[in-house]
Amino acid sequence: MGKPKIIVFASGTKEGGGSGFENLVAATKTGILDAEIVAVVSNHEHGGVRARADRLGIPFVFFGPDSDYRKIVADSGAEWVALSGWFKLVKGLDAQKTFNIHPALLSQLGGRFGGKGMYGHHIHDAVKAAFDAGEITESGFTMHFVTDEIDRGPAFFEHSVPLVAGMSADDIARAVNKAEHEWQPKITNMVTHGEVRWDGGDPGSLVAPNPTT
Image (tube, rainbow, N blue to C red):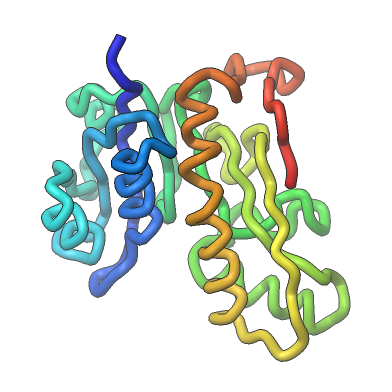
């Protein structure tokens, strides 16, 4: 059998973004991620993600107003869908094969840092406000399977990042991003090789050898 095939959905911005996507590609070269990135998708036709894709030689797919998730995945030949900084609602994909990295701890404060409006810099602004109010002492990231309900699919990995007095939202974003880059390829490898798995329906069926660290 060949290596698992992954398509990455990464919004980025008109000017930049996509560092997580590039980090995953780099991990396939070092062997940390024993998989093939077959394509990357962005909703910015000529943005930062496309620039990285062109430089790395990875096929790029533009996600326009009429794009269909299932068709894009099928056409790419991918077996797995990795959302990495994807800011659009996902509908209709196989929940067993679709997973996201979310730049906050979804278990914190009753899930406050997930759901509608909690994407991009909005998350880190909300985390900073909670930290400044004395409600939390750490942030981090969560990896979870993706269902039609935003950020509510079963979480299979969380990693905490301590917060320090005086941190700005940008400082928090950088600290979380550094941790994401370290762990995302390793956990993605576990998912695509069946060490982390879910049946797509019953939360109790989740298998995750090391759900938190």
